[in-house]
Image 1 (cartoon, rainbow, N blue to C red):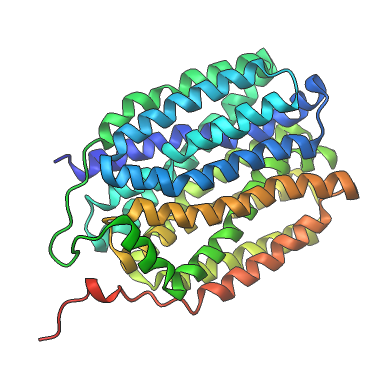
Image 2 (cartoon, rainbow, N blue to C red):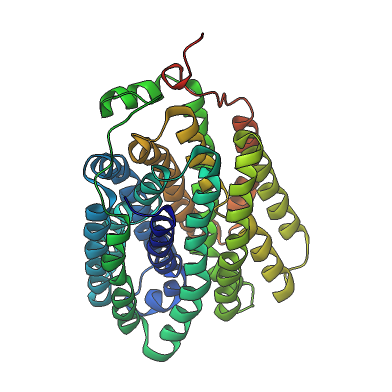
Length: 398
């Protein structure tokens, strides 16, 4: 059996690469829009397709990882990711972008991001340290954003978008090797966690009201982060700040989420996770509202990015921690995949609807307002979640 820290660090590195590359796609929008004559809504649709394909595939990919182990799934996802980036470099029109960056990368992401690797981590880490471990892995996505986004911006400036996609594909290929660190067939359940089929696990979760509430809140998380990651650089450019400030903003989001993910992971081991989630969503709404009230300057843009970065993916260790706390770890990748599907539906609307609203209205004002309202709704939705483990996981009464 591998050391828990071997699994944690390899999982974090895989997420670093996959999420880092993905978070750079918003930088490609202005250059590709001119070169291929595609609108923001069309580029946003590619990202939306990516997110919905990512989401729809996750429950199935998660079930495969629960049965056969995370290593094979990660390797397969990484190979498809590399192929999608190479295909994007040769795309000649919007359809090519929708297939490559949209469908191919979306399906690939399902195999080499949180759902699969957190399942592997959850099975080797004790429950009282699980949220912290999830926080470390989630921080990997932010390290990738902090490192890869500025690198992608430099590549775009020097080589253009086509060569940049090839270079990012080479970087992503490293995940194929890292898959060894999370490989291994999951052990059968024991102790308080009796054997249960995937279908039984899914039915048990869907019959529980708190599982639906958790899904609804995570939808909002997807909307928030994908809207900002995809459209924030263009928003700042529209307002006269330039794409360089947008790249710096995305990098700061990644930097501060390193601390935020770990901090919220620790908080989830000490406080009720659903209440921490409620506070996080409410804080997002407050930060967005303050950003809109203050005059837009490079300083306020970067301050907003820093604050949102701290709140960025802190939802992941808390949400995954709740799933494992309530339902156990045997089918964590499957159930986590269902929850992440909800996240990706939100991401679809955050990417596409924001671009559509801009094309129709000429601004992102309506989308910012919607983001505030959704954050407040998510805060309220998380409060009534019952985090008590299901009956089969509780010790029998004496």
